[in-house]
Image 1 (cartoon, rainbow, N blue to C red):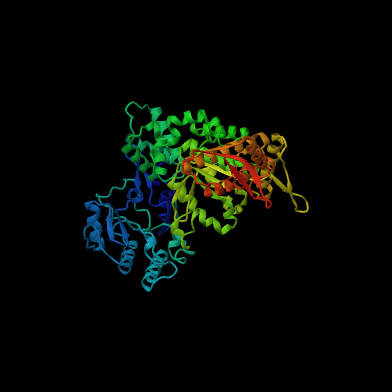
Image 2: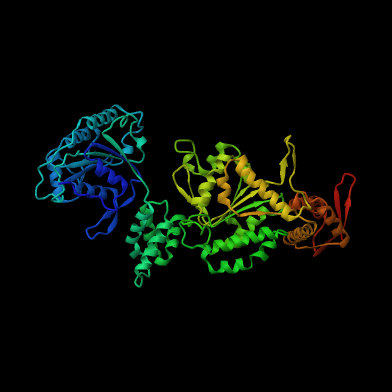
Length: 629
């Protein structure tokens, strides 16, 4: 008669492998997602999330095992489960002297327990060594005691034999037809963070030691687990079966890549915050970023974006196409439709913008304006100058140094900033200047919306807007490597847009050999045009108003400019637009602000309410002065 299948649809892969390998393997190295919950089958056919130890014992119990011994380096040895039958049997067979449920012991005595357990015929049992990663200070630099312990364990793995146990009594909970007399090992299980935490020679070429990797839960597992947490959410009284199924689907999608403990924590937060089951995304967002208030779902944001075009154009002038593209992305973000074409795009950033064009045309200013528009505070704006990351090793600044390296405990500048401000605009200025290996990190951000730093902490980008700026396509190199303009002021916008987008595509596809990064950015490229003379005059007017406002704030004076002086100043500022709006500002600084500051510094301002610039006087050394009235 064949043995019945004890594996259910809920059983994780590592536990299936354990059940299959118990007749031929004496020790198991269990590593990976070991501190997670796993689905435990119930008698009514349902399942419930449970810790690894409980799920392991449920599996062993079905196969006729009577108890499990658990050792950890801090408290020692204890029988499991905490039931009188198991405790009495384990105490008698292993002569345990329990103190508050534990028996303190060192590695030498544990070696004796291990030897006795693997040869025990009076009852099937197993030994779980918890926190095995902490048994040795360094796995390849063992003390004499540690070396003797691991050597004894390796020897046992090779020399012990599977045991036929025919002494089952009426107290056993194994099924009557489980054929518990089939030869099986009394196994030793090592619970590790990583397989490398054991000495490298321990499992080398040892066919009796099996490695079991505990993976993160898949979608189907998360759906089943989500059903267990449905009752923790509010407004479930009138929910239908379809509502519950939709809830489980949404919960599973929102927690992609997370352990089942994350679902439990998110559900506990929902219970405390009174979140309805229809708002399960808010519960997951609260778990990920540590904030319940979501600016993206505030009613006032839709009102702001309704007038976004006019608001942006007060600060970014003459870039109608780029502004339109930005507003479209904002609307898409507010409506939660970013990545809607993908099956599971819920974790992607709220929006992605790649701003390309000449220098000084408003790319950085647009990023600041978007921050002000969405979050009401430019302090939510995070900027990284990518020219500082031209070398590969500088990537450690963004994500943090790897474990074991100096400074790894500090984390990365990017991951720390996003954890501190999960609702923000993140600007990567002049992205083409970064090292290509650093750009690879953006693949994970754009696709999965998260990054793990050197400490193992996760930063979530699902509530951010990512903005990249670049000057790609403005200049090109001829066959001799000479830098020459690819587009010039006066070219039609359609020409500028086509050439710049073509240069960007060539750069990612052929220069970097990373077309996948360009695909992640998609059609979110907004090309800025050169500053035209009419736009330059509007920028000039805006900057002149800013200067007058600053004089009013600092000195309580109204600043006026005579028409002739103003006309001459504008001519100086707009005659060369190669540097865009930034060039206009530079000219204003040298030809107006500097001489104005000199004049105000020497002038007695007491009792004055108004000051008027009558004319500009250019000296022999081209030093401009102002004549005030």
